[in-house]
Image (cartoon, rainbow, N blue to C red; front, side, top):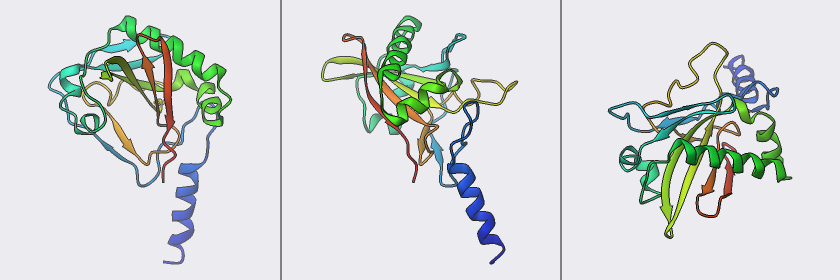
Length: 178
């Protein structure tokens, strides 16, 4: 047992440490990923600057972790996503928040999922960021059929809202893990 304790501590420390700009701490040992599997694949957004999946309104409305916090779902278009991406980059570029500075450096490496919802009569897009994949792997693995909700994943998992009518971002939130 005494030999096992240093190994466990090393694994936890390695998973929590910030990696280089092109690497991600994958997840803490207590990471839980959840979300129901959709009957069909989500629309994919694949550009040189960002890669992700659009969660259709009908799928978002059946996802318990989304229903808990969001309502009146709608499906964003690729044009909506392009506007959101432009503004979230500008938001991160102008922020002095340590988390924003760190995420900005590796922004293109994150994969995304986009969920359209309405709050207080205002259309918004939840932009959920997940770690990238290794070179040569499918960048859309896991994104095509399920909204990915991470609990205690650490700083490689974060989100921001895009307010469609106001053409601005807010609610930047990084998962700091346990």
